[in-house]
Length: 388
Image (cartoon, rainbow, N blue to C red):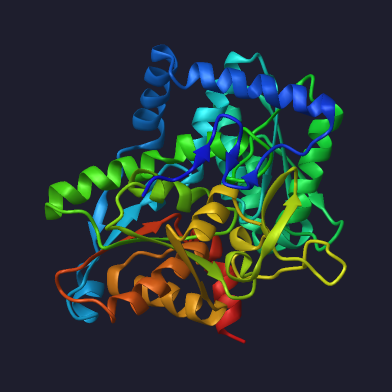
């Protein structure tokens, strides 16, 4: 299947683009030029690979979930272990790439948005290492749900700005970060963590996160001698999912399945609209504004989705399904009990769907679940939910 994508101009079918003020467009054009140059620069690539290995701890394993496989009748379920990365999630892959780009562009001030806090922690970590000022925008509700990650970011030297406008969630944090960029674009590098936003952000994030599927494809061929039946990943903004899908896009035999929260079903119920400077499938209210959303996992609580995911949905190359908070909570406990691996609540959505999918397949089938992060950050929240 040949996908009609023009990443150079930031379009994936009808989705993507850059709907921003002219001053900001000039900044983003420069960013796109610098990214296009450095992504192919041997010295940049060598430095990026160095930090992935020596700092992040890549390559991480593709682990056969033996007990889960046995309990589900023999369909092999492999876990791509992004939870084993330094800082505990996939977010650091993209952060290292962008921080190296920021360094080459002479930036000293870095801003970022965060929902569950993992991107904020990764950004604060990299800024500490490269001696850059770091400001993290986070919705007020999310600062309360993820108080431990707020402390981590502050411990790493970042200033965490609690955003109480709107619902006080991820969308509002992105709003605040974009406003900061508009006001301070001459001195500031916006290190965006999801595969969303105006061009070139979705393309950049995909590029740096594609290390996930680059590794998993090689690993599954070594372990099984064949490609997987399906790759399953949770989808909020879409960074871990697009990274997990990237190297399988042209492999038509591989099903690509994005799993979103039933409480924020952007890809299953969204319509084309512009949000945060780009066009994607978006949940809208009766007035045509982004619809309030809520998920038990802060990292999936977003009314839009990456433009490439919107295109993959529209083109039929990828399938998108929903999982309820209750089902995710059950999967969180299941993986913990049978494999000794506590997944992030975001990742638990993907695990929950993989369990359903396995019951429809045979012993000859193989499923890769992208375990996008570990659940340390969620344990207190889950404790409180379970004791109610």
